[in-house]
Image (cartoon, rainbow, N blue to C red; front, side, top):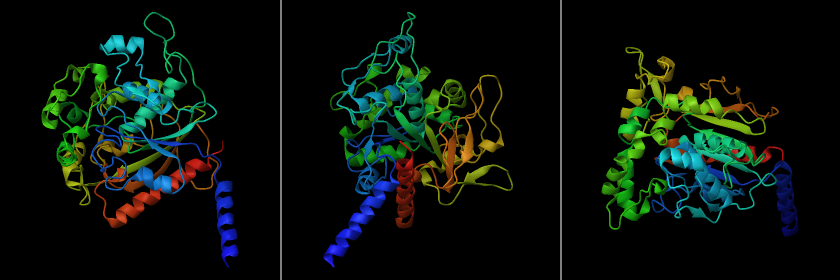
Amino acid sequence: MKRNRSFLWLGLFLASMVSAENNYPIILVHGFMGWGREEMGNYRYWGGRVDLEQYLIEKGYTVYTANVGPVSSNWDRAVELYYQIKGGQVDYGKTHSELYGLVRGPEEKSYKGLYSEWDENHPVHLVGHSMGGQTIRMLDYMLRTSIIDSSGLSEDSGLLGKTHEGWIKSITSISTPHNGTTLSNIVSTGIPFLQDFIALAAIAGNSFYNFDLEQWGFQRTKNESWGDYFRRMREHPAWGTKNIVSWDVSVEGARQMNSFCTANPEVYYFSFITSNTVLDSTSYCHVPDEGMSYIIRANARLMGMKKAFFADGSSTDSTWFENDGIVNKISMYGPTTGLNGPDPITTYRKNELLIPGQWYVMGEYRSDHRKFAGHSLNKNELKIFKNIYSNHMELLWSLPK
């Protein structure tokens, strides 16, 4: 009996190896106001009170969690992501650093590397929630583009100034503002769901959250309270530039990014869509669904009636009203507002041949922005959450080498 059982387990193992076309590492990239595994105690960005990374590892996947600047621009976050994965001293580039007055290579940002083997023969799958989806697209652009510095020469860094083709196998965006969010003006004047972070910081302790703005010469002072640290960060001159989160998630900032961060014909793209508002038949605006987290309902209500304007004077319309409390639903499918036209976007159908270079919409879910990252879930929602992520990791590993 034991012998038969051993053969059964061997058969299941071999079958799983056959179904997995690749075993490339999966990198999870948080969004705006996110945090890493060393912050917020045992409360995870990915999973909340459940450790999604560990859950997926126990399912047999190779998974790492990145920790990039929570309010930094997509450029800065993408550079940080590269060095966190590969290892080395962060280098934001000569021209970019000169333009915004940055510390080009802050000594605090030197990393051993989550996956130092990373190259064209050892690619990775990148999964980004919210702004994290924009960040991983920016990194793809940097990897396949030779950036020229202000003197007309190629940037001199491990990432910029040279091309790195084939380093990314797939990009997955979850509730991502590819075309921006009409909440962006609130981002620039206040922090959505700030109450949640204040409560978490109080529980975890003052030393458990860092805005990672060393490139701006901004650091937390000794014995500084979290509240004082936050207020000082909000008063920093960086918020008046285009090298900050509020610009990148605005509709105009996203349009400019979409104009040069176009789909890579060698990369597989997937997007998950979330919405948690309903149409009000009287006002024809969108209002929060009863299942939405209370702390983002005010955001959802405002987004459900608000327009945002592009630089040319045009604006969003009522198709932007439906949202998940942070991001407009219409913005999540994939980039469509770039001056060179939209990326190809289609619906995912199981067992169909997948083609790189176009976005596959993996489904539309009745969920708010926080819940789809694993926060404030009940027992049934948690089970669904785990299954969604586990099934998608299986799909990623089924992609051809």
